[in-house]
Length: 195
Image (tube, rainbow, N blue to C red; front, side, top):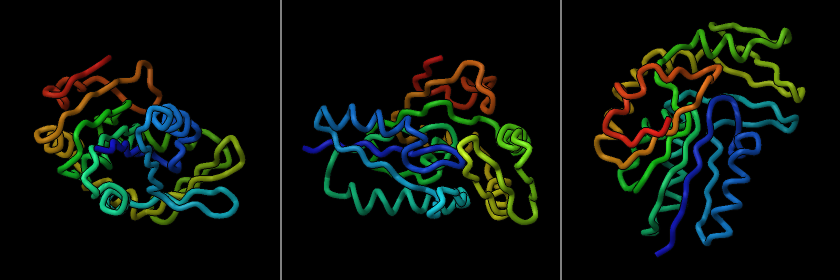
Protein backbone atom coordinates (compact mmCIF):
# COMPACT_ATOMS: atom_id res chain seq x y z
CA UNK A 1 0.00 0.00 0.00
CA UNK A 2 1.34 3.42 -0.95
CA UNK A 3 2.17 5.96 1.77
CA UNK A 4 1.68 9.69 1.32
CA UNK A 5 2.33 12.72 3.49
CA UNK A 6 0.38 15.95 3.15
CA UNK A 7 2.42 19.00 4.12
CA UNK A 8 0.32 21.91 5.43
CA UNK A 9 2.19 25.21 5.67
CA UNK A 10 1.70 28.11 8.07
CA UNK A 11 0.63 31.74 7.81
CA UNK A 12 1.54 33.82 4.78
CA UNK A 13 3.72 31.34 2.91
CA UNK A 14 3.31 28.81 0.12
CA UNK A 15 3.72 25.04 -0.05
CA UNK A 16 7.51 25.07 0.25
CA UNK A 17 7.14 26.85 3.62
CA UNK A 18 10.16 28.96 2.63
CA UNK A 19 12.34 25.86 2.24
CA UNK A 20 11.42 23.85 5.32
CA UNK A 21 8.94 21.52 3.65
CA UNK A 22 10.87 20.98 0.42
CA UNK A 23 13.78 19.53 2.36
CA UNK A 24 11.52 17.26 4.39
CA UNK A 25 9.68 16.19 1.23
CA UNK A 26 12.99 15.16 -0.34
CA UNK A 27 13.84 13.01 2.68
CA UNK A 28 10.49 11.20 2.60
CA UNK A 29 10.55 10.83 -1.18
CA UNK A 30 13.94 9.09 -0.93
CA UNK A 31 12.25 6.59 1.40
CA UNK A 32 9.50 5.81 -1.13
CA UNK A 33 6.87 7.97 0.56
CA UNK A 34 4.98 10.36 -1.72
CA UNK A 35 5.08 13.95 -0.44
CA UNK A 36 2.20 16.25 -1.32
CA UNK A 37 2.90 19.92 -0.70
CA UNK A 38 -0.28 21.99 -0.65
CA UNK A 39 -0.57 25.67 -1.60
CA UNK A 40 -3.28 27.15 0.63
CA UNK A 41 -2.78 30.71 -0.58
CA UNK A 42 -2.22 32.38 -3.94
CA UNK A 43 1.00 33.77 -5.38
CA UNK A 44 1.51 36.24 -8.21
CA UNK A 45 4.35 36.31 -10.74
CA UNK A 46 6.31 38.73 -8.55
CA UNK A 47 6.31 36.28 -5.65
CA UNK A 48 3.79 38.18 -3.54
CA UNK A 49 1.42 36.01 -1.53
CA UNK A 50 -2.31 36.60 -1.08
CA UNK A 51 -3.63 34.89 2.04
CA UNK A 52 -6.95 33.07 1.84
CA UNK A 53 -9.32 32.86 4.81
CA UNK A 54 -8.85 29.89 7.14
CA UNK A 55 -12.13 28.40 5.92
CA UNK A 56 -10.93 28.67 2.31
CA UNK A 57 -7.57 27.15 3.21
CA UNK A 58 -9.28 24.17 4.85
CA UNK A 59 -11.45 23.73 1.73
CA UNK A 60 -8.31 23.75 -0.46
CA UNK A 61 -6.73 21.12 1.82
CA UNK A 62 -9.81 18.85 1.65
CA UNK A 63 -9.96 19.18 -2.15
CA UNK A 64 -6.24 18.39 -2.45
CA UNK A 65 -6.73 15.31 -0.29
CA UNK A 66 -9.67 14.13 -2.40
CA UNK A 67 -7.73 14.67 -5.64
CA UNK A 68 -4.35 13.27 -4.52
CA UNK A 69 -5.04 10.78 -1.73
CA UNK A 70 -8.42 9.12 -2.18
CA UNK A 71 -6.80 6.07 -3.79
CA UNK A 72 -6.63 4.02 -0.59
CA UNK A 73 -3.12 5.20 0.35
CA UNK A 74 -2.08 5.50 3.97
CA UNK A 75 -1.92 9.27 4.53
CA UNK A 76 -0.22 11.21 7.30
CA UNK A 77 0.07 15.00 7.69
CA UNK A 78 2.87 17.29 8.77
CA UNK A 79 1.60 20.75 9.66
CA UNK A 80 3.44 23.87 10.70
CA UNK A 81 2.10 26.72 12.81
CA UNK A 82 -1.22 27.97 11.39
CA UNK A 83 -1.27 24.90 9.12
CA UNK A 84 -2.02 22.89 12.28
CA UNK A 85 -5.25 24.82 12.70
CA UNK A 86 -6.11 24.53 8.99
CA UNK A 87 -5.60 20.75 9.09
CA UNK A 88 -7.75 20.46 12.21
CA UNK A 89 -10.43 22.63 10.65
CA UNK A 90 -10.41 20.46 7.50
CA UNK A 91 -10.81 17.42 9.78
CA UNK A 92 -10.15 14.79 7.09
CA UNK A 93 -11.37 11.57 8.75
CA UNK A 94 -8.99 9.11 7.07
CA UNK A 95 -5.70 10.78 8.05
CA UNK A 96 -3.66 8.26 10.02
CA UNK A 97 -1.27 10.42 12.05
CA UNK A 98 -0.84 14.18 12.21
CA UNK A 99 2.36 15.85 13.29
CA UNK A 100 1.76 19.39 14.57
CA UNK A 101 4.90 21.56 14.52
CA UNK A 102 4.56 24.65 16.74
CA UNK A 103 0.75 24.92 16.62
CA UNK A 104 -0.77 28.26 17.61
CA UNK A 105 -2.85 27.71 20.73
CA UNK A 106 -4.34 31.14 21.23
CA UNK A 107 -6.24 33.06 18.56
CA UNK A 108 -4.25 36.23 19.09
CA UNK A 109 -4.33 38.36 15.89
CA UNK A 110 -2.48 41.19 17.63
CA UNK A 111 0.54 38.97 18.23
CA UNK A 112 0.49 37.86 14.58
CA UNK A 113 0.20 41.43 13.36
CA UNK A 114 2.96 42.67 15.67
CA UNK A 115 5.34 39.97 14.45
CA UNK A 116 4.69 40.35 10.74
CA UNK A 117 4.46 44.15 10.70
CA UNK A 118 7.91 44.82 12.20
CA UNK A 119 9.18 45.83 8.78
CA UNK A 120 8.52 49.58 8.44
CA UNK A 121 7.21 49.02 4.90
CA UNK A 122 4.33 46.93 6.25
CA UNK A 123 0.84 48.42 6.34
CA UNK A 124 -1.87 47.11 8.66
CA UNK A 125 -5.46 47.77 7.56
CA UNK A 126 -7.90 45.41 9.25
CA UNK A 127 -10.83 46.82 7.24
CA UNK A 128 -9.28 46.35 3.79
CA UNK A 129 -5.98 44.65 2.92
CA UNK A 130 -2.90 44.51 5.13
CA UNK A 131 0.53 44.28 3.49
CA UNK A 132 3.35 42.57 5.37
CA UNK A 133 6.71 43.30 3.75
CA UNK A 134 9.18 40.39 3.72
CA UNK A 135 12.97 40.53 3.95
CA UNK A 136 13.29 39.08 0.45
CA UNK A 137 11.44 42.06 -1.07
CA UNK A 138 8.12 40.27 -1.52
CA UNK A 139 4.93 41.02 0.39
CA UNK A 140 2.18 39.01 2.00
CA UNK A 141 -1.28 40.54 1.50
CA UNK A 142 -3.97 39.72 4.05
CA UNK A 143 -7.57 40.78 3.33
CA UNK A 144 -10.09 41.79 5.98
CA UNK A 145 -11.99 38.55 5.22
CA UNK A 146 -9.07 36.56 6.68
CA UNK A 147 -9.24 38.44 10.00
CA UNK A 148 -13.05 38.25 10.08
CA UNK A 149 -13.01 34.49 9.50
CA UNK A 150 -10.25 34.00 12.06
CA UNK A 151 -12.16 35.99 14.69
CA UNK A 152 -14.90 33.32 14.58
CA UNK A 153 -12.47 30.48 15.35
CA UNK A 154 -12.13 28.83 18.75
CA UNK A 155 -8.74 27.18 18.36
CA UNK A 156 -9.09 24.99 21.42
CA UNK A 157 -12.43 23.51 20.29
CA UNK A 158 -11.15 22.95 16.75
CA UNK A 159 -8.02 21.13 17.97
CA UNK A 160 -9.85 19.07 20.56
CA UNK A 161 -12.47 18.00 18.05
CA UNK A 162 -9.69 16.90 15.70
CA UNK A 163 -7.57 15.00 18.22
CA UNK A 164 -10.66 13.22 19.56
CA UNK A 165 -10.68 11.17 16.34
CA UNK A 166 -7.06 11.31 15.11
CA UNK A 167 -3.66 10.24 16.33
CA UNK A 168 -1.70 13.45 16.86
CA UNK A 169 1.84 14.30 17.88
CA UNK A 170 2.56 17.87 18.97
CA UNK A 171 6.05 19.34 18.86
CA UNK A 172 6.22 22.69 20.60
CA UNK A 173 8.69 25.46 19.80
CA UNK A 174 10.88 26.96 22.48
CA UNK A 175 11.01 30.77 22.61
CA UNK A 176 8.74 31.18 19.59
CA UNK A 177 8.10 34.81 18.62
CA UNK A 178 4.51 34.18 17.51
CA UNK A 179 3.23 31.02 19.20
CA UNK A 180 2.78 30.61 22.96
CA UNK A 181 3.08 27.16 24.56
CA UNK A 182 1.51 28.17 27.87
CA UNK A 183 -1.63 26.04 27.45
CA UNK A 184 -0.35 23.23 25.23
CA UNK A 185 -1.21 20.49 27.76
CA UNK A 186 -4.66 21.97 28.32
CA UNK A 187 -5.43 22.06 24.60
CA UNK A 188 -3.62 18.90 23.41
CA UNK A 189 -3.79 16.80 26.58
CA UNK A 190 -4.76 13.56 24.83
CA UNK A 191 -2.08 13.91 22.13
CA UNK A 192 1.57 12.98 22.47
CA UNK A 193 3.38 16.24 23.30
CA UNK A 194 7.08 16.74 22.67
CA UNK A 195 8.41 19.97 24.22
